[in-house]
Length: 530
Image 1 (tube, rainbow, N blue to C red):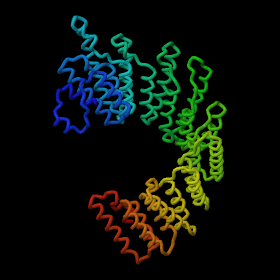
Image 2: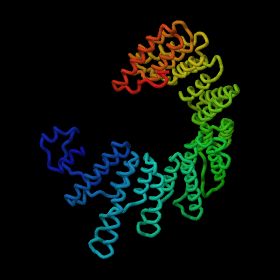
Image 3: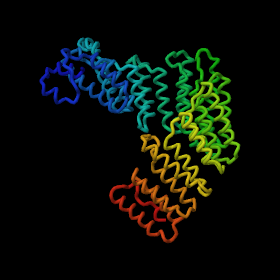
Image 4: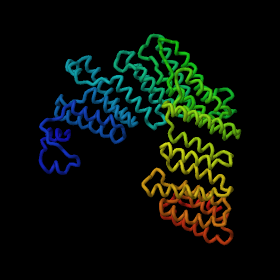
């Protein structure tokens, strides 16, 4: 419809024009106006992406060109136009493009201010000048937050300072920053992945609380702002946990928990009215799950137990973070009681699910399965399989990852009789499911490689022969990579004896040939030659 309106505007209703257009055009007898353009732009902004951002920018450019040619005020871009376009660019993380539009608006606005001092004509232009407002500035800040530019935090702070200067000097009162502006700058720092960024995010939060307490109502922080700051600590948790690095400074998880306690203290502050939500606690739990500090799992468990008492019942993400923390603790401490505590949590989740208070997704099953798979328990593979079958009976979606965990569990225990064959059985199930249309279970390089690793460790007399058949199936279904070929070579070396040397050399020649043909993912590595 919109293209038809444009054709009517351009007086191009000839048949050839319509037939060559890739978009089906509906004949219309009305030209588009600013509202028409804004409606299309709004639709693009509701479906964020780089393609939509580019389309929005191109449509704005077309509006400006049409207005420049015709001087028709009915198609002049207005503040809504610019606001929607910049929002579409922000959603796509196209910071450079959004900033460029803002700078052009600032230039036109500044030029208008200079001319309005001495020109009656300029004063008459007041109705057609688009004043850069808070929403537009916030869109550019949001674009910085979503961009991959490593300097986005610095750029966001500079723009925030510019907003304060423009509003405080009276040059552009519409640019006055609010808590959304500050929260977005905080988000830029939190996403930087540095301790300096997390520190700066918390400093800005303190600034917001101070400004609000002094009467600036626009700077009232909400729980989202606090969560943004907590995310800054979560993004670096585990990176600063070494004992020698944390002698003077609290580790990120400790900083996050301290901030959580501060949020709790605001509950009685009626002016701020800050109440932590489930996500608030989950971010802190994520910090402890990522932490490499001994005792992190205990810290996470304590927070989980506090949540119901403060009116914030944990959800599945809460439990999953604690289970992750237990998994990390088990990698440092082989105490078998940890897996028992994980089992207790899982049973607790199932009771809550039965009561309709919780959902259990495949990620929970995967965490527990991995605990069994990587444990020293002889029955770890069987326990992992029990959970796989439980997922099937509960209607929880299984995937290649589910089967890979079971295969890995067998590979770790391949020296126990029957586990290598069990690994093969899981692979056969995956192949069967994928051939029936369940592409979620299609085996990949890791699946084939793990089964062959199980055969390599098994010591079975026919291990190489079975591995060869698996390789043939892999080459039929996927593009084997170096890791898979190396697993096959390892199986040949460990189980083939001297009589299999020619087979190993044949695999090496194949890998060299594949590299020469452009398959660099299958090229020989140092492990291959060793």
